[in-house]
Amino acid sequence: MDFDKLTEVMRRLSLEAGDIIMDIYDADDFEVKSKSDDSPVTAADEAADAHISAGLRAAFPDVALVTEEQADSHSVTANTFLIVDPLDGTKEFIHRRGDFTVNIAYVEDGAPQRGVVYAPAKGRLFYTNAAGVSVEEVGDLDKATIGTTIPISVSTPDNTGLMVVASKSHRDQATDDYINKYAVNDMKSAGSSLKFCLVATGEADIYPRVGRTMEWDTAAGHAVLTGAGGHVVRFDDHTPLSYGKDDFANPFFIAYAPGIDLKLP
Picture 1 (cartoon, helix red, strand yellow):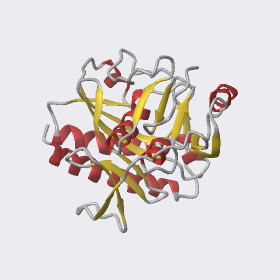
Picture 2 (cartoon, helix red, strand yellow):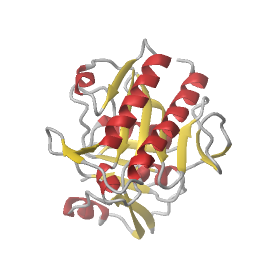
Picture 3 (tube, one colour):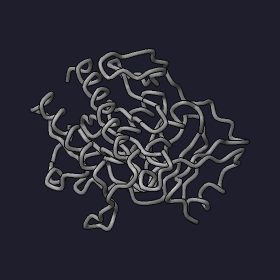
Picture 4 (cartoon, helix red, strand yellow):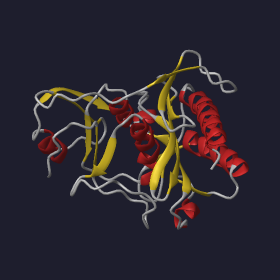
């Protein structure tokens, strides 16, 4: 893989998709439909997906593509592929809470190697550069030209008082029970893959997810966190979270900064 080209294409497509999403987000109203699993989908999901998919297929025709909004792509069987969630956090989008993201990732041999997470309503853009180092691009985000980038890095956790981030829309008792195993200094809530990015920037130390997610929900954030020095492991046995599973469904997991005394369920 040409990682210079991959970084440029993923970054540009995420920003272009963000513009598409925000045009719909800023409208007076938009239609919300239900998919077969009863999860919501909007015109923003579909339009962003069409744009990203076309761009990736044109740039990397020989790499398999998996995307949430195209069911026929879910039959892909490969250890190396591109994976897209064009609008992660649709509920946040519908309720106009701003915590939604564009996610594009490249998975190689079952592990996310590169990724971009863009939160268009918040103007925050995170990605792994060509060298695999995670950065946040700051200032005016120009689709054609990469601007000022700041390398990001996970925290050095204090196990006597951790910063925890958890889901805004999917917080439940099982999550709270697990969090209560730790000495917690403060709690944050965030939607979508932004939770990975908060750990990647050191704004949080740990993000436990005791709930259903799919690989397209997590791959880009996982790559960004890895490039910032963090880890993502299975909840049950603390082995690395892998990708390319038959149904693309994830087990429960923990994203964290090294140095945390991880607890088993």
